[in-house]
Image (cartoon, rainbow, N blue to C red; front, top):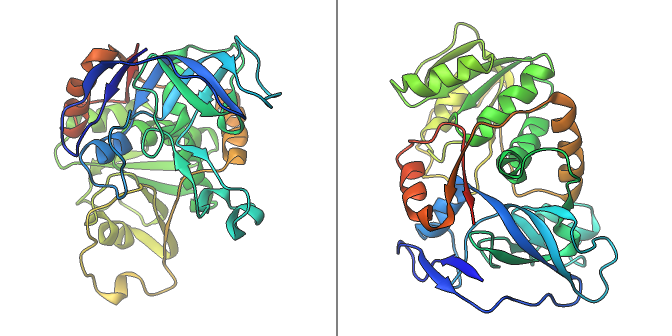
Length: 327
């Protein structure tokens, strides 16, 4: 098999030839047809997440076909199309798993971070964390749904029944959430880097009511805001934009330090919460809703060997919608 491999923090990915892996008990081998490139991949490549074991193959928005089935797997057959998300394995015995909060598992494995991911021609997945996708839709178009969509969905649910919803950082996740929120009848406000006319125009094309810089305030207070950009300075900005009793949701796995801010921004029962990972039920719920809502992802496909160039473009904020690698 071919794989783009990270060997050290900040190092360029190296194309390597490896023996095709064999699935163990409860696992499936998947031939990768498409793998989205997510901002979390940047955090892995740049060494911003703890406890990375090198070498590692990044990538956790995987769409492919089951090619081999390990012992004890009854949910998938050879030829099935599946999606493999960020959360790749849980222990099933810790207090969080037993309470239905597997996204907070004490001993998880994460695809493309603590187990090899989808920047490759093949990958191994825990069969329990390989979503059945059926045959509807294009592989490249579906790939961003496996993280940008799933985490965006979980963040949207946690944001509550907000009529006026702000989205900070209009990338892959926000362009999916904006469509979902509009389908639900919400009013959406998009916040981008200052002066990023391309992102603002893209947001408007998806039906947002207002688009401007993250240092601006819309004409009326928001009921809730979701922060997708990994910039801690957006927290006080979002708190400033939400009404009394409003909620700010931090949706990323990594964020720069949050600067100090006056207590008055949090007072009046404003809430600041975070989203961690996903559950399998999130996947079941979201994939159903995404089909009902007719979500259309804006994607740009690239050959697998161009992974480093694609990561550079994402790091520079030069991707509208989502980038997807195709082995």
